[in-house]
Length: 140
Length: 187
Image 1 (cartoon, helix red, strand yellow):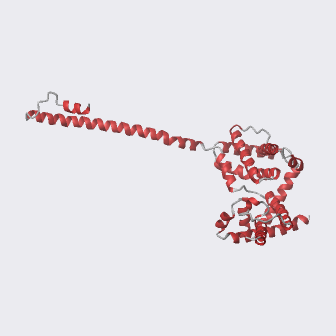
Image 2 (tube, helix red, strand yellow):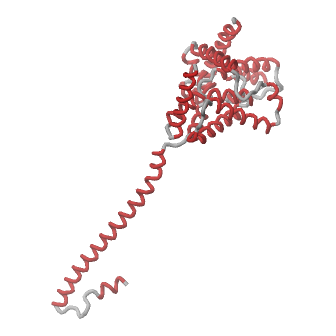
Image 3 (cartoon, rainbow over the protein chains, first blue to last red):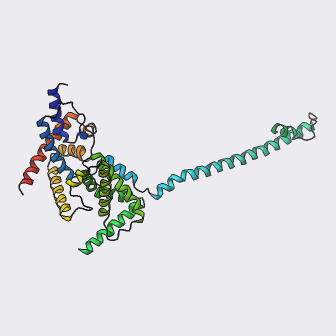
């Protein structure tokens, strides 16, 4: 971009966004600060000041930051803690359920194994004194 | 008159108490009412938009901290917040070692009634002038100047190109300058 085009762009930027460079989408490189640019910036700065006096709303990002700092709802605190408590309770319940189920299965297995052992003994196919010994050995 | 002030104080205290209890609507009402003048003050004193926003955020953070134990008595929340913002501005100016601004600006702990009234009247006039702009120009000014959206964001929101946005903004500013010059010089 040559200097003439940069000057045109600079004039466009000041006229559209005002004197505050932070509002400009880009900063064209213009050598020095031409007198016309200084005048234009001064005029637009005055309008910026008037607009600032009329500001009846905050920039959205700042508003969001300020509200993010505001005290949280008590329910949010409870809700934030709740999954933790319920997760623990659920874990305990699952563990308890699993234990009960496992115990029941074991007892049921033992019952069926005992019955099977009795049948085997009756058929003379085993010499085990303790019908549950092999089961207990497996467990150990 | 005294009764009105008492009512206003009580209403403010109730609103702040609600905000302290986590009422987001109450917090938003406080921010929307007190935020713009606090930011405007910080901008005027610091002449630095970014630093002014930091000051506004910090001032509100301090308000949220004291909110649960707010004992305003006869003090308005706005006065308290204004004082905090001024102190934060002073700290920043001191750090910058920029005493010129302090001398240039008439800085007081709280603005005088005349200043408040003048600014309020001026603000109302500018808002009235903005309200007379064509809707697209008004939206462009609101988004780019007050909400500080980037050019790309504002253009996307208005569903136009950045070039078209710049044209809207330039026309809006030209119209505002003419209207306000006419009005402010006709006094």
